Image (cartoon, rainbow over all chains, first blue to last red; front, side, top):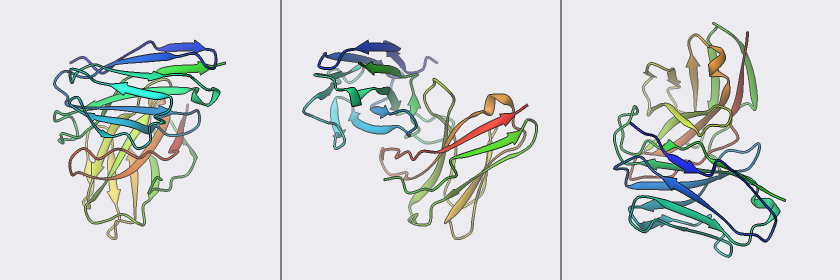
Length: 118
Length: 111
């Protein structure tokens, strides 16, 4: 079974530019998550979708970050304009089928996109 | 904020058992203990979870104290591929509650 796919794997931009990340979750997974992981820290949830609706976006800096999951499958996370402190790895995860844990809410993570803002 | 406390780093000799502790003194009755690990340049990966009984799977064993205020993840025969950051997370199993990661324990397996 294919895992969570993300692209690009790496991105370097200058501050004030915009950037977009793409995520394709595991087929059939209804829930999709975007996490931000700053170097040396654990991942922090930015936004959670259930199908194409937002469940939790309390930690999303909405003045510059936006995310959408229009057809309840793929998702895009955008930053506009980027700041230096946005340099991080952006992880996408999905859940919705029983995994090794025996539960429906086991999260499967993609490899992430490493963003560097200069 | 994370509800768990873990040592920042540990070393373990290859082939020995790696025992990773976690304190979760404020855990509530409906919260499970989950363990994930993150190998360098990869996303986190589920290892094991439990409520109050000890659990074992093909990757690891989870020992939860009777008062549920702490737990230990055991990798019985550590290999170099087990070098990673290990995260202990408490979470309810209702709906799709988010994972709240702390800074984890960086485990280094020494050849």
